[in-house]
Image (cartoon, rainbow, N blue to C red; front, side, top):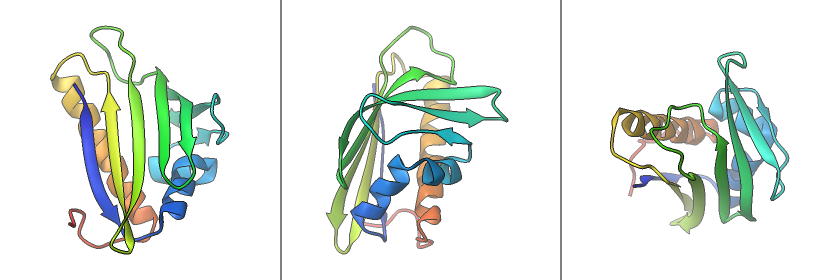
Length: 141
């Protein structure tokens, strides 16, 4: 089962790619101090709630201005069973803007945790859009 969200951001793919890979950018729109190095094999740490909850993701793929892929190594949400969860951000030019596609694979079932995490990713996407200066309506196609 996958989480899937998409949105159009009035900005260039290069700027979105930077926002998805640079620690200072990630810290702002994710709303958590972030430790990161934008290289495959490194681990990003998001320190939520003053470090009480830490999300860790390993960078498994980077394609400049096109794709960022993470593997969750330490979730901050309860899991019913251990599954490998992959978060993939795909960026595509779209009529002078960028289509941002987020997919998170590896959910064992559609339950309250799935719904809550899906909502949180959608919230992060809205924060990313606003952070990049796009305050137009959120659902644009």
